Image 1 (cartoon, rainbow, N blue to C red):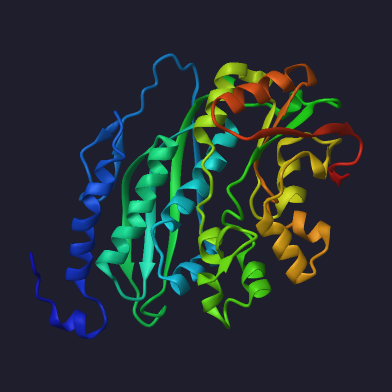
Image 2: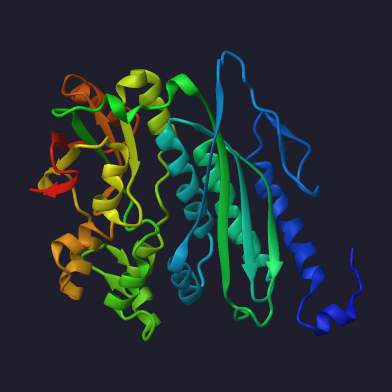
Length: 348
């Protein structure tokens, strides 16, 4: 249905483009529906009825994040189908660190000018991310902001809510010296450090580098850098279901890399020793370090370096935990141990 609003259109906002975008995204949203979804899109709020059966003290766990300057690579390459996965991943991977199962997700897309087909591609990625995380896309917002951003630019942010019984939340107070740190492999750079990535590869001045085939990567640079963030929800929930409170801590390795994120699941007076050679570092990080002349510490303080999540378990449980994770399709490695004394991370 076309709605005439000449005055608003002359001011830079086309409401009919927004309506068309909603129409195009409906099928993608439908794919994410789970048992608790009530109604559908089109109302003023998304509704969800959680199953609280068997829970003594239900706890809601929430997370919100965006994709950051990785978006500039989507603008430069014209590829918009993976960014939505990143937006979901950055939220649900945080939620699962508390052991919670993500239930719902909402997105917010702001554009200089609404392009319905572009919106559809973005939301298709969001829907795919929700399916990988096992949560429902229950709502969102697409806003047109002429003059605030360029016509071909947009920003996307996400918000998710999960649920867990309080007694099942991993307790870092149980962590002690001698415990082992397990790494779960990343799919690449994920969604952090792209201001430095763009500088190293000179992408703001020469976007053609994105389309060039790189033998070291066995793909184009754009394909490598736009690989979406891996979603670890099912793997982490599975290992927690197997080991319960014996999983003592979970960290999502995002902005700030190892030095900021690994200690977030450790108690006071406890640090982490990471064996750098114990896990595989993807070629892209070696390229960034070499081309940018970046010191090792800065690399590990900016990027995930091949580790998207880390788990803390007792030494007695470590080998079995790795075996269970590998059996469920994750590349898992023992990458270090917990030590008493200096808080923080030591690379060896």
